[in-house]
Image 1 (cartoon, one colour):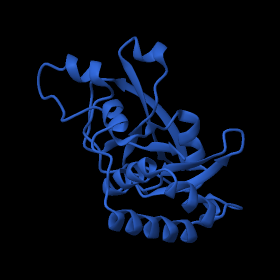
Image 2: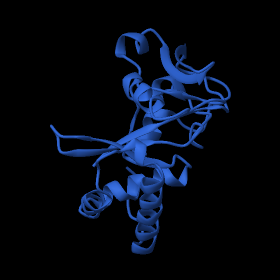
Image 3: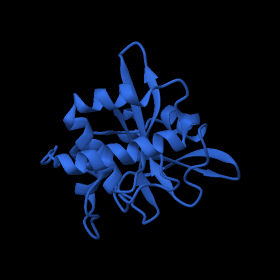
Length: 185
């Protein structure tokens, strides 16, 4: 991760944004208590920084669940369209293989810099069960190694009221394709 420090003012502002979003979208996290989530966040400032990075790229992070087994709250990017971290190929290997028109970065490294992970296909489908996302854009998802080893990568979107999973060369990138992250706190 790069410099993972934000000011207390930025932290407090972000916590208010997250609280407002939490209260406006109760169907995403029924039975969860914002006070407990805020307390957990305040004990983990590096997670607040990651959420700040998600918010700065218009990911609109929100709590989407609680993992009892691991005692963790789960945040996903919940923006209507793929966050403003787009035009990125899948990983460093794909980025390195491009001889011309290299994008600025790749999604795996960008997610790592932010302290988050890409959504898996299952997590992407969980997100889509909470609403309609990526109606005009698409989002790279965590790709199984057997697909990636053959040069491919996976992405998803929602069209025709259906969630689709597709493949592309990992070195491809598009202005309408970004990635959604998951953060566990």
